[in-house]
Image (spheres, rainbow, N blue to C red):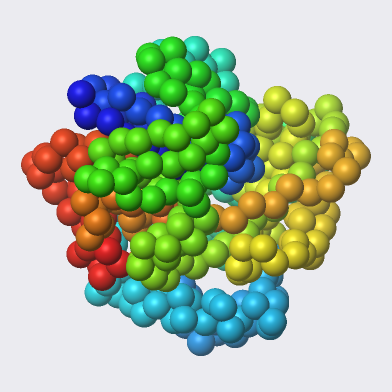
Length: 412
């Protein structure tokens, strides 16, 4: 029987453990915390099958100047962090040029379109059906200009990729969301995505399914990974585990471990913030206020208000500007009351310059990478896990696997 150690118990790591288990592997899943308590806990909880085109770096001088001058709430940055970020950001800018971006979309769009089907393989067996809402989500717009541009984009995505949507005018939006206080220009309702009312709990349910199927969940430090003969070993609170394969699925912490084996991963770190608010009135389904870069999502613990991206290396102090602006925008939209938590949550999204996740083998026999999903680890975790499991089994029939392999991008 093949044996594997998966390092990292977020959505990506837990999905990897389940996919390998389905292929007959005996799997140990190791993390320093319980499953779903880090980055996977804090996202918007949307399985974004409409997200066929990932976030590209701005190419126009006007847009770059807007971000540089912080004239919006979508991106934040601090001058003292730039020395650590400038090289990955330059790669991100280069990979966002039309030709490389087109190659990225060719692979990425196929991943996104199958994401809900891949989650479905785990949701019901994990007993997590009550956490999932299959009503899509809405992007709302405050000005006619941004609304008209969004409607045109939605029509293009429907024509090119078959992504379903409904365009709602001001009156239709008001009727669909009776708690919405201001009258907005309109909305695009992305109808195919599923949303989750507790992302961390969904990961925990997947992990419980993994255990029920015979997997081993262990607490330990992934940095203890080392080669052991022809295989790998890692230390846990319960002792040492050895296996033929080791899969690094540590999200934003992956480059730190990979560096100990000689790999330099040019990751772009984007921090996000959220806070839950009380109140009787909020959106019926998750709603993104595009012009204020604020998402309000119905969660079991309250209305989760989420921000855009803060370009910040891991370990740097949180900032408050984006979450304060987001909370004010959410209060404009809905009658939200006091925050549930005393302080906002923050977590780091592991983004790659070419916007594709890193999925595949390294130079070291039995060492595999599975990270770098950017904003979409929650969405794509099961999908890329199945692709990785196929690679580990020696399969090369799926063309989706090839563009994601780190060796083809010079990182392994």
